[in-house]
Length: 387
Image (cartoon, one colour):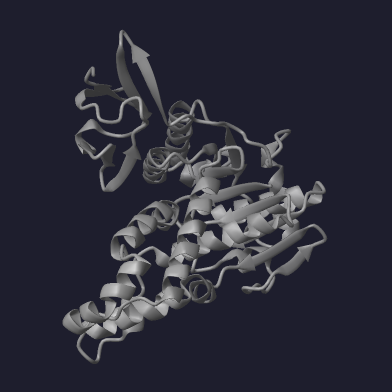
């Protein structure tokens, strides 16, 4: 089963492109499911059908749904939610709704990812198409499994045996309720699901991301940042779809000044993403909605099979030269002035502007201090001291 996620800046048309791709693949005989993780769902509008959290048959080979994050939240939290609520209400003043405090930033995006995992593990389809939220929310969605897993480990490190022995005393002194066995079971279940999710999302033979953009300077700039951050988290971007390309005849007369701007934008995209397959979607005479219109526009892939893995990028590698080890990390479009590097307990931390990622070092360099680092031609090269 293949999973293809479509993301991009708000308003670039990613929902329409995702829907057109799903229709094309279904027409070719593949069993396709398309889902929306965007809380401001527009997938139903694009397909011109009514959608909800239950699977809806669109075509003979195409099903669709819009994820209900509230329902997914209830399913994912279980007894852990009740326990977290007890902790919060034991420490906050009356009048504050514990339900509101339980809404951690990015948590709803995580539950949307759980739905992707569930659909994948049931394996009822050949392809899952995911219409993601705009860029910022998608980044939260994709980095949250790692962050939330770390939070759970730090938040609830108490072992069952310790709770049974010291729990009553701790609860009396601190007024914080101790977790029951069913809470630990839920934590273990949640941690197991997070591990399965992370393994799946980083499997480049299964999951691809495709960035939808337009040939406008401000959108291209965000597309580059998006690509860099996705590389930082080791996700595979296998295509760039350039939407809303105006035909030259449409830019004659009053819009003539746009000809040069669009040409500059298309050239920048070509030069910036030379190693990534690019597809152009011309601006249509009609709004991209309803199945016949989406089916007509889906020809932008040409002879390429959209269900395939169109490119694979290696984010980082360990190399050895003259008895020294180096780590190379591919971060195109990053600015040296916006980068920060640190090392702690067998990990290195890399920050690019306001996005941070921790890399667990392999055994061959674990314990070795960083001796130097340089950033050239989109690649960060870290040199480790000799043993």
